[in-house]
Structures are given as structure tokens and as C-alpha cells.
Length: 371
Image 1 (tube, rainbow, N blue to C red):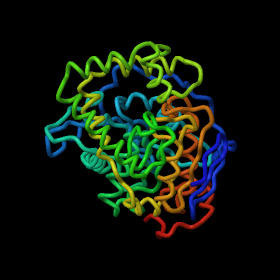
Image 2 (cartoon, rainbow, N blue to C red):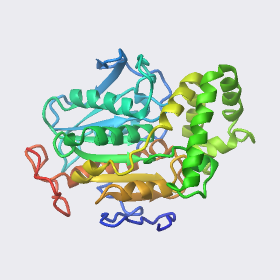
Image 3 (cartoon, one colour):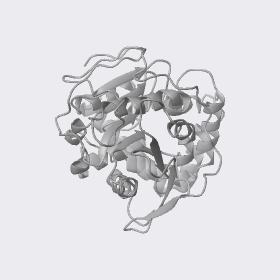
């Protein structure tokens, strides 16, 4: 496996090369990088799942926009954290079609309820399918972008519903996410993903999560221990893994405050669900559409080695490593995520939905153009 270094982008066999130092699309105005820890706005609509979970869905931009971007947030986050990205994407941009943005609160997060089903990652993929059905009901192409657990939700959707990709889904962005072995790098950063040792550690993490769920008092004690002040010895490893080793910006401080406010059993239950994620050799559908993978070079939760492994499972995907960034990449660098969306829009094949000023993809996709 080719090692990742800051500012370089190794590519898997058959992958399209990218560049971490050159933007993939024209520059856009600077965005505010601060996270929005405020209570989310009221949802545009609510989607109800078979087990009774009510998923809050938010829509921004012109309802008649020909392209939709659907943003999927990560563990312990909410739809409101995408606000800087949403504000930028709904602004008109020369050479691109108008964009409508859809975000949603994952079940048990923000304004969405928990539901009755046992939590696992396949369930979150099913939730995304319902939200996608709402987002794509007008027939235009949809670009999916997911951070961390949101990226895993997209993978689960691709594994379970491959026919959606190349039909309703026209492009995918996966940010700070992995195929499996979630958070392996936080415990054993030098361990190669996929090895027997890595699988043993994954089983150990599942046992820890199960133990925390059985003992709420222990879970609360661990939560207090690891979510203390940013520089405290017991808390610093977690914050360093999530936010990287850079300065403690307001975005970092807001993220830490938000993490502390989430009920500890919610954190433990969803962590247990994350340990069930495994999409190895199940992502062939993503090869049908332009796919870009972003990772912070200092990410210890879903480290660069796991990002490379993810790209190796998606023929034609582009991998971009971002120097100096940890797991909180999309909120520290919102402009980069926005430019990734525009890069995906440039790669969508010519179709009635795409502005004629948008140049064609550098290589034709294996599937016919969207109708």
C-alpha cells in the first residue's frame, strides 16, 4: 500500500488522479468556518420509517433547481452543521446549474427521533434511501455527500440498493469515512486495516461499546473523562484524533462543546452501531458515478490508510489527502467540501439536467448518460 503524505494523492489501480494543492473547480467566496451549534431550524418535512423513527428533512434553495445535493452528517452531529456549505451551494454560480440542497438529521440526532429498531449501519442506509426518495422525487440528478457516519450511510445504501447509482444518484463525495474497523486508528494508529490484529481490535471495540450500554454509570464516567478540557491529559487524545493537531479554533471549541452535550447513552449506542459497518467488496455501484474521497492527513478516527483502502474498493474514485486536518475536516475546511461538490457536478455526463456550460467529464462513465 502506498503511504499517504501531506499534499500527495496516491491513487488505487484504475483510480483517477487528483490534486490536493490545486482546486478541482473555480474558486468560490470564502465561507465562515465556524460550526453552528444552535438548535436546528424547523424541518421542511418529516419522513417516517417502518419502525416509527421520524427523520427531520431540511430543504434549501429553489424547489425547481435541476440538481440536488444531499448532505449526510456524522455521529453526534446534526443537519445544522452543514449550514456554511448549504449557504454557499445555493448561491448562483456561473457555468453550473442551480442547486437545491437537502440535509437531514440522522435518527436519534437533532430533531429526528430514535425509532424502535435495533441500531446498525444497514438501518441508517435504509433511512437514507427514504430521504433520497424525497430528494429525488422531481427526477433530477442527486449528488450525495457524507461525513464519517454519513459516508458510511451512503456506502450501506450503495451496497443494498445499487440500482440507485447511475439512475437517481449522479455523484458521491465521501469525507473522513471508512469501509469498516471504525476508530481503529485512535487505539492502534500504526495497525494496517484488514489484518487479523485489526479484526481482533474491532471485536474488542464492539465489546467495549456493549459494556458501556449495559452500564450507564460507567458510560457517564468515561464520557466525563474523555470529553474534558481540550488540553487535559485524559481528553487530549480524543480531541487530537477528531480535530488534528492544529490550533484550537472556535470551530474546534464549538465541536467539543457539542460533543459534551450529547446524552452519553446516545453516543454509546451509535458507537456500537458504527462497529457493525463493513462494506468491503460491496461498493461496485459507486464505480458507476464520479466518486471523490477526502481525508485529513492527521485523521486518527478514519485515518488515511483507511481512506486509501476505501478508494481501492471503488474503481475510478479520486482520493484527496488534506494536510494538517483531522477528522473534523468538513467543518474546518467547508470551502474544500463545496469545491468537491462542484468538481462532481463537472464530471456528471451531459444530460438535460446539467448546464451546457459545464464541461464534460474527462473520461466517459461506463453507464449511459442520465435521462
